[in-house]
Length: 190
Image (cartoon, rainbow, N blue to C red; front, side):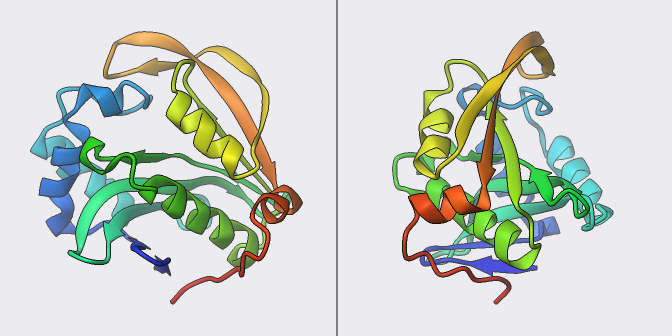
């Protein structure tokens, strides 16, 4: 699968992504905001993750690498999870290698993922979240039209910090995304 935007390609994970995956996730400043990523993050962790993505049922979960077009470098990851066609919903998250923060890559990648969910998968609602104090994630989601919906107290055990953390839940309806992104032309696979 390939989802393409101006500067980024979202694609399936590949065996040769191990080095970039370790570079991006062996950083406590990144993984402290993620529930299921250990720290330190090793080559074995990356290989195991990539192998798991190969057996993912794309009717339920679509894990994607975020790749810069200019140099074919993996700078992060995103996924579409808990795909429920009956209810028209899904979830998922995003992370970026800290070296690539503050360039607009995250919002470009997440927006592309959202467009794919609404246009290609035909979903009507996307549910996401963020850990308290992760203002970067919160601001990005609100900029794309997400609404804060509540807090799930001590929802996750963060493997990187070994602490239980709350999840601030957000939701986005298709019409809200279109409203916050006027003139957006939906697109799908390239």
